[in-house]
Image (cartoon, rainbow, N blue to C red; front, side):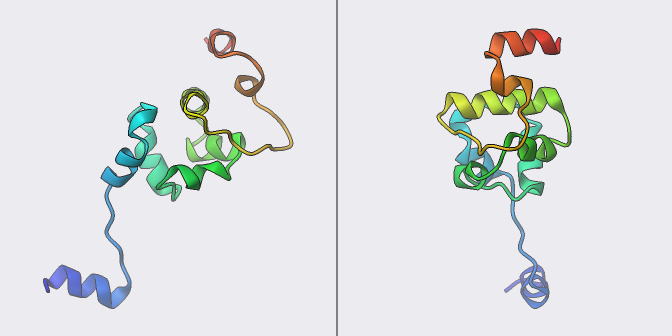
Length: 104
């Protein structure tokens, strides 16, 4: 066992990479910015995002509305619906072309 493995085991540290996240979401064609944000938000599979709301996604995307909107539409296109929340964002109500146009 290497020194790094020993130290990680001793202190309960897990080393992970972005590649499993990229593989889990390969068919979604997300923007490359989203993968590190998913990593920080402990989103490692589609099941991890199913119990999130659009507001949770907005927080995961670090309040980047455009990235949230793109991610939301990629999820929706692939059949992943987010949970409801008290309020709704415009991109949840309007068709994609209208919400993108309003954003611009």
